[in-house]
Image 1 (cartoon, one colour):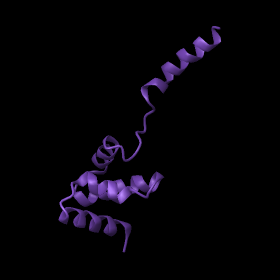
Image 2 (tube, rainbow, N blue to C red):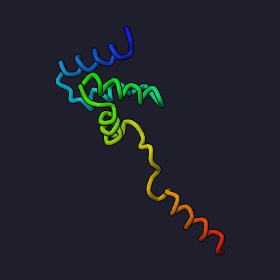
Image 3 (cartoon, rainbow, N blue to C red):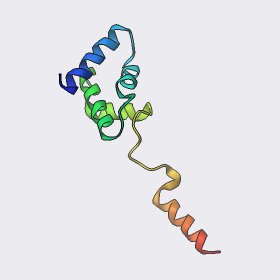
Length: 89
């Protein structure tokens, strides 16, 4: 059985139990990390009938995968201001 068919089966079973899509996603990805988690999110999206970018957005919003952007306090402009403040002493 391929990974895609396993994810599709998990979605079908989850829906039989009345789980919402995000609960199914959390169950599918609970023991998976890194790039495989991202792949499983895309497969989950395919199984529920949404585009990969929408699946990734929903997973990020639910905290299932990290954002690709650094936190605002660590953006480049802030780092430059911090570095200048450190050298001014």
